[in-house]
Image (cartoon, rainbow, N blue to C red; front, top):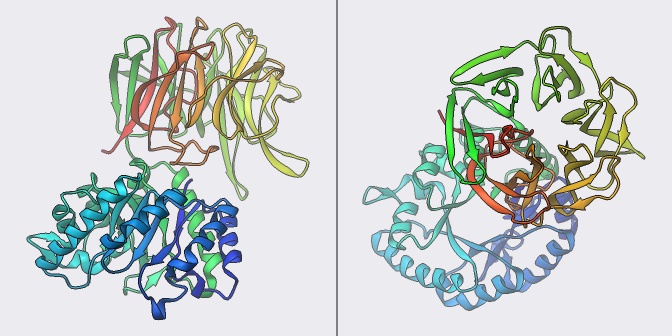
Length: 539
């Protein structure tokens, strides 16, 4: 999950040297920062807002630590006259946005004056690939001009050539419902800043106050927006609070709530999409049954089959916490599921085989966590993603195990490896791996030898599924700036891509709101033309 920290006042919240502060922010799990730059004399705000003469030094420190800087919060008067300075910063450091605050207590004349200056600056920045964003405070929401909040009025006066960095905490303090404000300005919002307050109006760590964090986070993630947390109220507990905030966001990133699911079928060659069913709950990961034509999926821990508007539950016995990693047996007399259990150590997952005609589930993988993805065409072997301790470190690799049970064999090493699936002839295994940096789709021999990278996307590619005739592959793509390479999260803007089985002719098939649950397992129809997938929406 890509999460940043705004650095206003960060050096006043600790006695540590700046380089150590930034290093500990990175160690806490944050991937980018938003520095604050003063173009005028800053006086008492020294260390809270950095002067121009100190800015390059800080930027060099960020670069050395691998902390990204996509946006810079700028303070100063007559910013249009400093366009050359900001454009030079954008060129040298790859800055994509400069964030500004509205003048205090402006009337409509002052707003018009500022709008002219900002449009001039925005046009100059656009020439170097950067944009200008308005950051709201509570007063900008509470006050109104011509029936609109000040920041919305300013966006109109700027001919909507500037965007918004919505501070959802200040929006809440200004009397707006944060999610409603985000939705109302969806076309202008370019990033979301998280500040939080308790019921008495005191600033608190993000997630500890009245802010509807889950809703705001879901909006930001669904729209692929950068997310930045505030830290200027943490005081001496800076790093502990930042770690707690990061954990809250991580929990939100992996959670699935109530929602609407759409079951879709796409024709790979023509691009035609048919949405065949809507469910008022989360369903995930369809398998396509060759023998019955049913689509099999998981929902709320159980397994269901659907065809022509009729849904039936498949009896999985004690396996009542099935996740979206399930596979049909080659002759379709059984289904193998990844069943989760929960305890003091969190959750884990093991693979079981469940006969379709009844009978108790049979455990295949005693070791855990194990997440199934492939069953060999000859029925003898299964391939799965597993988290294991190797030389004192937790690693994620592809393993194989006899379907009848036995010793598991590690097939990969290096990077994060997931999604193994056998080719129709059983000779190779397709999987995805971060070994090249971004997540990409790979293919290796069945024994793990001769891995070959099959995708060359500039984004993260997951779950390559081969058609029954062995000629086509469909996979899911996440934009690299929206998450980390080893993450495949739910409820995001993503894409489905297709290619020939030799890696050629890669092309985008569709854009959708989905992700985790869309196409985790093979969902090809027997005709090798159609495949099923799930998209999501609000109720």
